Image (tube, rainbow, N blue to C red; front, side, top):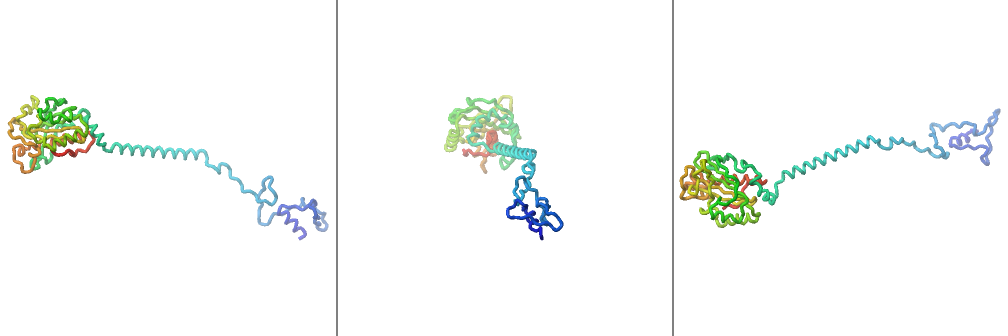
Amino acid sequence: LAHSQELWNAARGRTDGPDTPGREPAAAPAGEPPRPAADRPAPPWPGSHLPPQRAGARPGMPAAPPRRPASARRPGARVLAAAACLVLGIGLIGGAAAGSWLTDDSADAPPSPQEAFTTGHDVWHSTPVDTLFPRTVNGLGVGPGGADRTWTRIAVAPDSGCADAYDPRLAQALATAGCARLLRATYVDATHSSLITVGAQTASTDPAGMMALNTRFSTKNLANRTDLMPLPYAPKGTPAEGFGRAQRASWTVRVLTDVPVIVYAVSGFADGRAVTEPQPAEAATRSGATTAPAESGLGHDAKDLADRVAADFRTAAGLPSQTTESSP
């Protein structure tokens, strides 16, 4: 009890020695000389361990928490470099995927009408002849009564202009479209009983000009006039050598509007017989038609081969092959 105040003060970091005003040193126990307060050991606070004080800390102030080492406070250089590489890699992969997706979509997208029409001007020389005029054409169910038809190409004309390729009246009717190039080929059917010449004139006009010509042919019924029949291509030394004006039995003329092309076809008998009453393909393919061009399938020959060549030109220009022009 005699030293309780000193113990209390020592535990709190205080020392009341002789320099403290108004205080007297406590008496030492009997038989023991008094000791200075600074020399007396101060027992620790019961049940606690005082943390080391910082230099310059004032007595009685709580000690500051220990500081973490710098390596624990921020990520290392290797961690930062790995994270940067990961972000960069993900960005590159994502960019490549997006670019591929955009490129694929762009490649798969159909051309605009103007682009297709412009491409159509070059189809005649940028597309192989075997694509525009295949060596063999199979028509499933397109003959009279739904019969199958097969045609084999026997002659291809060199590409040329349109001079002397038409009778004068048909040449005059097509003159407004202009003639950049004319392609022609002649086919024979599987029975070698009929011949068909298919032609494709690449026009030099614009879409409005093709639309105007198509309207004129449709409203004035020009495609069905016998004085506007196309001429056959009948090179010597081929089975078509005798295929002339008098042998023409059926025909069709198509003025396309989505590509600058005029497609026609004319058919006749392979034995060279003359036909006194030719019939346009539209009429010869109607149900119940009993004329010679209808019953022999010459109307179907002209119509279906013209359909096929028109589809080939549209496909080469990047368009679907369905027919979009008005029926003559």
